[in-house]
Image (tube, rainbow, N blue to C red; front, top):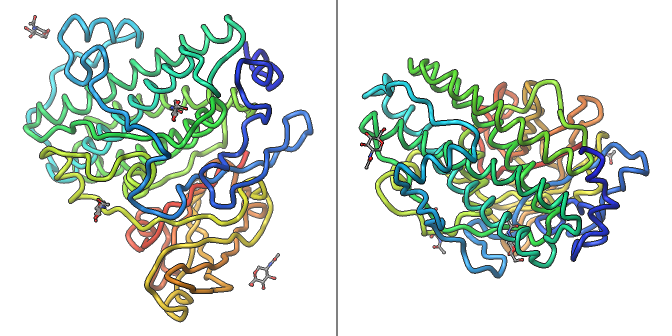
Length: 404
Ligand SMILES: *[C@@H]1O[C@H](CO)[C@@H](O)[C@H](O)[C@H]1NC(C)=O
Ligand SMILES: *[C@@H]1O[C@H](CO)[C@@H](O)[C@H](O)[C@H]1NC(C)=O
Ligand SMILES: *[C@@H]1O[C@H](CO)[C@@H](O)[C@H](O)[C@H]1NC(C)=O
Ligand SMILES: *[C@@H]1O[C@H](CO)[C@@H](O)[C@H](O)[C@H]1NC(C)=O
């Protein structure tokens, strides 16, 4: 099956662009460049994901995606749940749920963020499946066999994500906490290839965040959920192997996947896909009070130029700060399980409320493949030794970089 998804097949498919998996250039302000084709032997490719200039955007000219789904999700009766479970190839965990958390504030935030993210994923995969099924321009797959196989895989993913959401909300409800209800969503993708590349990146962000969730559960004494999060991580990793395979990348990205922080996941969602102001209800109100949303950090370097080599990257942010204030900032890079790389900003220019600057990104020296989370930090950055400390010092971010 693997090689059946060569770019040749996709290029030959109905209405799929002739540029195989452009590096998400729609999302970067650099806007350009195409990824070297797999057959060129180039192994260093990058994509960065950021929405451009506004933090609470977005739109992409779309009518926002709204719940419920046609099956009623997120409100499902028993028969519908059974159907979702059959498509997902398994049931919600059927053991008794705890009626209280040891660490109510922290553990509630963790499960609310998971439920919040899973609702976005359900929206995204629903839209993607609709687009492929209906041969929407840019999403048609010309081979019936490949189209059926892709839809079979994605329909399982959709059902599995629905269960992840129902599971997280079920845990919250059993513990007497507020559940998360849907927002409205938009998607920065107008082609199959870009949608799969985007799925790969947001799944990497999820994988970086679930690790932080496990650390939070353990620190708060709610250890009984650690295995559940481990089970979800493995599941999301299986998904990502499929997306990477479609993108002609080797299935397993790196020996140790990148550790992130909840602030980066929440900022990613709110800066790029959640329609500002559409998240209502007590659960969302609490979540928005519990996790900050950072300012948007735009990676100005052309994503196709970001390879596994040491380089200066260019960034921009909207800020009222002066050039001398900006000069005191650093950029932190989180990759795999390594201590943060911290680089002072250089080449600072401030014009009309937009600051541009560079930072040294030693991707080659440190073999920074897979997801790198970049963030602008203030204060004494030399003291930042963990992802959590970086997140606590962040003012703009994340700038998401994917290499190989
Ligand atoms: C749905 O299933 C739950 C759990 O098995 C059960 O308690 C409930 O009575 C069922 N509801 C209906 C309407 O059958
Ligand atoms: C589905 O297609 C529409 C129309 O092109 C597009 O706006 C939307 O982003 C697509 N959905 C996904 C998940 O890419
Ligand atoms: C978007 O949400 C933020 C809070 O997250 C708020 O400060 C801002 O005013 C909102 N913008 C719009 C246009 O609604
Ligand atoms: C990176 O930027 C710094 C500061 O402007 C500069 O001194 C250095 O030469 C640059 N390095 C490369 C490889 O361009």
